[in-house]
Image (cartoon, rainbow, N blue to C red; front, side, top):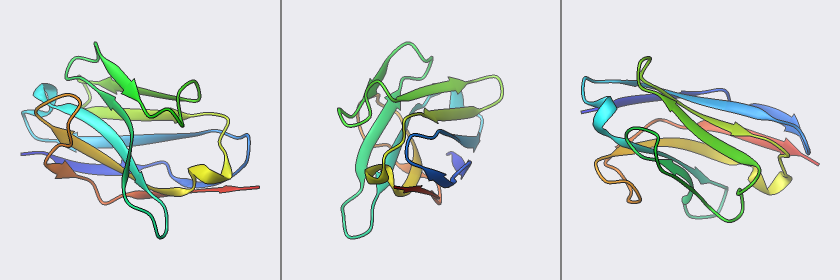
Length: 119
């Protein structure tokens, strides 16, 4: 099993940057694919970015390509999402996700962290 805790959310102006972190616990973290999802008010949760168990593969939603970068540190059981050139439409609760298969939605979720981008 994996226990996930997000941090790093906050309020930022459009064009600014934020770095989200996901701290994982559980001995099997290094075998899990990881990802970030987000959910804006009144909308369904959507995929943002994913990374394979060893960081060798990544994928991104078209809406964030070129602006967001996902990374992981298996030594410290952490995953990060560097978000640059933020837009008001990036405003959402961001969730960390972990699972077995890269490119699919994993079984484990964090509690979420709020990101608000003002115009």
